[in-house]
Amino acid sequence: MTSEGICYADNACHQAVEIVRHEEVGRSTRLLAVRCPEIAKRILPGQFVMLRPHGIYDPLIGRPLALFDVWYEGGEPAGIEVVYLVKGKLTSWLAEQAIGQTVEIWGPLGNGFDPQPTDHLVLVAGGIGQTPFLAVAKERLGIATFGLPNRNASNVSRITLCYGARTADYHAGVDRFQEVGIDVQLATDDGTAGHHGLVTTLLEKVLAGEPKAPRTQILTCGPERMMEAVAGVAAEFDLPCQVSLETPMACGIGICFTCVAAIATKDGWDYRRTCIEGPVFNAVDVVWDTTK
Ligand SMILES: Cc1cc2nc3c(=O)[nH]c(=O)nc-3n(C[C@H](O)[C@H](O)[C@H](O)COP(=O)(O)OP(=O)(O)OC[C@H]3O[C@@H](n4cnc5c(N)ncnc54)[C@H](O)[C@@H]3O)c2cc1C
Ligand code: FES
Image: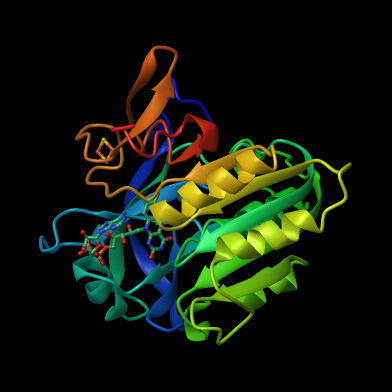
């Protein structure tokens, strides 16, 4: 992860791929698995793909979706899973697509999370922001390896997921996180599951219960205001924090500059393309409010 920029798009494939699984995993939330071995063997946790219809030009522009997991056939990476919230034009169209139909995807894109060794990794998700964290957890706990060449990033002894949503039935894929041994701590705005209130308050409780010695790191993904608040908590506890920004994107490969975010430089701040230099940045480098 760097703010200076490395082009990851030269490792990407653009393909029409078959839908092999498509099911509801939460309220207005669906899991989509597609067959794409070339992308599956290259992709890293925190990277994403762009997805659009195949052979249809409305919607024309692809939408970014994070890697949820890689699926295997005969022990080899055969495809990827993504989890999406049915929100607007593309995701409403996608929700209607059946197994056996094709979609266009290009990826892997972006930098992914930096797998620095740590004792306790705390993942903080809000809304649909949990999607990048299953692959992160599997890799860091040594349950799966990712990338070409395959990298070994098994370097964490304990993972907690603090996962906030508006109401309980928006929590999607919780069983998948629990299956791999993550301590899942839920929060809801309306109190229907877990902590009643903000996920950042839950995060503060988790961190306050920590012994001082272990190294703890935070990764976060979700609404921008939530990530800004998580970055504030990380600063308060003096902990390193990486954020995965969800800025709107059009090309995903560094051409259109739709996706820029304000990132600190040695002279102040400048715009960086989230699809190329991100989507993961060190929280301390993100300039949340450029008017300050
Ligand atoms: C790197 C990355 C990874 C992502 N991973 C996932 C994922 O795994 N699952 C998932 O459900 N979503 C994910 N998103 C967000 C998703 O790409 C957008 O919500 C997408 O626009 C939905 O497409 P749509 O056509 O259904 O909605 P649209 O018709 O594009 O938009 C619906 C509404 O959302 C607003 N909007 C569009 N894009 C964004 C955005 N990025 N952030 C905030 N508001 C937006 C629009 O202004 C509009 O009001 C990710 C975004 C990024 C940048
Ligand atoms: S989405 Fe086009 S430059 Fe980032």
